Image (cartoon, rainbow over all chains, first blue to last red; front, side):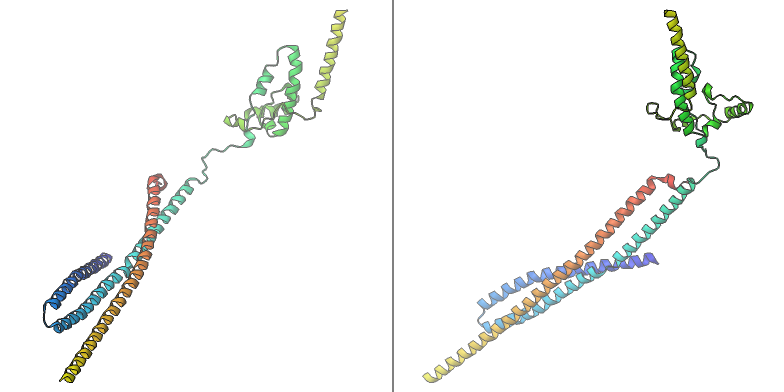
Length: 250
Length: 85
């Protein structure tokens, strides 16, 4: 049904175009005919003896020619006007384009729904919890390599204790999930030992250790009350060492 | 005799003048109709131009819409994974 309508519309457009071309061609031919008629009238008026009759015939011919020209012009203009005013094709094209746009929009919405369904929560997907974050490796190494010289033994714990204290304040959950690497934080009772053993099992060390907040050791303004006892003991050992040295010198 | 010749000459002149005036009237009528025809042609040209301009605008809009649709369809066909279940 639609194809038949389109065919009839196309045929009508072709017919209109043919009519317009034909009328335009006739108008062009009329121009040349008028030129020839004017030349004939001029020669007849100049050659004939009865000039009044020739003039009268020429007048009649001019009147008829004017009517014919007007008729031809009207025909051409009406054909052109009908050709231009036939905008059904544009409205059909607009409807088709709107239909295509709606179909495309529905396809896009369908694709978005599919993408969203892919991005939905899945039970099997991996989940990472912040409380299972492991600390960085250097503190462990420091605690393990603590059997060097005496001076390094004295100097190193100060810094490490400070950093560790601050770190354990920043990550309180870490205390329950990871073994403390420093000797000062070793548990002394059985219950603490039990907790420590549990903590040995729980931690999950993965690549997310870099996400744990590591404080900068250069900018440390925390009070040293927690490690003040160690400082005092170290200070006493320094005094003892100085006394022994003075005795040796004497 | 001379008087009769003078009268006929006057009549002939009168007839010639009348014919001349008739010819002038005819020419003025023809020129007036030609001018009307010219005015009609000018007006017709203007209306035709305006109609053609509106049609051209409609065609431009349709072409842009078609280009947009082509680009959208091209993007959709370039990513077939979007429609893969």
